[in-house]
Image (tube, rainbow, N blue to C red; front, side, top):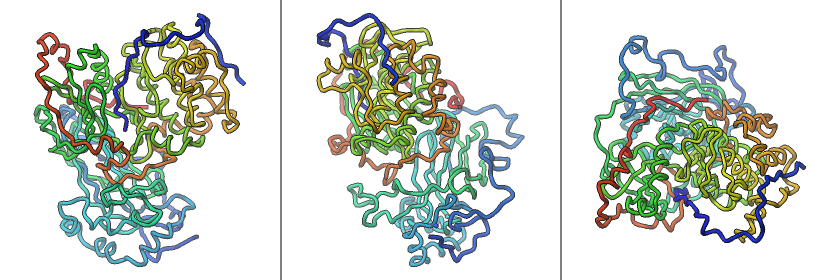
Length: 605
C-alpha cells in the first residue's frame, strides 16, 4: 500500500532543458468433468453448472421482496431521519440455492474433500442455529471455520471495509456462516456480500503462500465467484431487518440471509486512544501510516498521522486540508474512503479504509506487464474514479501505480489525495508544477497552465505502462524524459493492438484542446477499446468479476506491505512542544470529521 506523501516540485529545482521549449502544442500522429453430487438440493444445486429451472430467476436488476434493509416498512417512512453516523451491525447467517457459473464443474480438490471429510459439514448443517453459534465460540476466526475450507466463503464489505468469513458448515449449495460484524458509519454506503468457492486447499502444495505467521492465505486468484448481493441499508430506522437477498452474478441462483441494525453515534470524540496500533505500513516526510484496530467496532483501518509543525514549515496546510476535504466529499467504489479525521495539539489524523491487496505497482513489477483484459479493467475503474473527482471540480494530478491499491476481490482503490486541486471548473486552469516525472503532461512541463485534461494524459501513461511494462516516454535521465514527453513520437510495441493504440493516441495527444476526454469522460467511455467490452453501470456496481484477485489471508494481513515498515514498532511518537501559535492552530479548524457533510450517498452511477 502506498500512502506516500506527494510533492510539489518548485520550478527552481528543475535543471534547464537543453533545448528551447516551443510555445506551440504538439499532436502525436495516429498511426463441475461433470460430477453430480449425491445430495439433492431443493433450492438450486451444484449440477456441473447446470441450473435448475426456476420461474423466479433473478434479472440484472431484481431485488428481494420488501421489506429489505434498504426498503423500510411503510410505518418507518414517516419517522424523522436519524444521524447518519454510528454503528451498523450486519449478521450473515446462511445461503441457499447457490450454484456454480454455467459450464463450470466442482473443482477436484473440493470434490475430494466432500468425499473424505463429510462429518464436520454434515454435523453442523444438521444442528440448530443456536448450537452452531455456541460451537463457533467468541473467536470468529476459530479453527472450526478452517476445518470446512471446501465450503463457500464470504467477503462482507461496507464502505471499503472488508471481512473474510469462512463457513461453519452446511453444504455447497447452502453454506452456514453465522457471522456478525459491526461497521462504523460515516456516510451512506452499500453493503455487499460476495460468495466464493476455493479451487484448492489453502495450505496445499501449490496453493496460497504463507503470510509469515504460519497462516496460509484464505483467498486465491483462482477462486470461483458464486454471486453477490448489494444493497443500501436504511439508516433512518432503528428496526432490525431480517431478509433473504437474491444473489446476482456468478452462478445466478440462490439467496443469502442478512440481518441489519443501526445504532446512531453517541457523539463521543475520537482520539488516538480510540485505536489499537498494530503495524506501521508506510512513512513520509510529514508523518507515517499505521494499521490500526478501532477498539469499539474492532474494524481495521489505516491511520495517517501528520505533524502540524512540519506541514506549516513547508507551507503544505492548503494541500493537507484539500486532501481531507476531497476524501470527506467523494463516495466512489474505486476511491479509498475517509472514515474519520481528528487532531491533537501537535498532529492531524486521517482514518482511512485499510486496503491490503497490495499496490498496483507491486503487482505490475512482479508480472512485468498486464494483458489487455486486465489493463482495460483497471483503467476503466480509474476512469470512473477520475470522472467522479471531476464532477466535484477536483483534479487528481498524481495518477501512478503506487497510488492505486487492490482490495480483497481485485477491484482498484485510488489513494493519496495530497496533490489534488480543488474548485477547478471545466474552463479553469492552474499552473502549479507537481506530480511524478514519468507521468507529467506536456502542458504542465511547458508552463502554459493546465485543466482537468491533465488527468486524461496520466490515465493514458498508466494504461501504456500496464500494457507494455514502462511509461511511453521513460528515460533514466529526468531531463531527457521531459524532452521526450514534449517532442518524441509515440511508439508502440507490436503487442499493443489497434484499439488500444487508437485510445492511447487520443489520451496522449499533446494538445489538451484536442485530447480525448476534453469534452468529458463519456467520450473516453465511448471509445471502442471500452465500449465493446465494458458495461460501465455494471462496473460501477461491481457486477463484473475482476480478472485477478490477490491472495489475502485476513483483514489484518500485511504481507503485501514493505517489511521495512511492518517490522517497525507502531507508536504514536511524542512530539516536542512545537509552540504553534493560536493563529497557526486556527488554520486547522474544521479538520475533525466523523460524518459526511452531504448526509447521503453521492456515489451513484
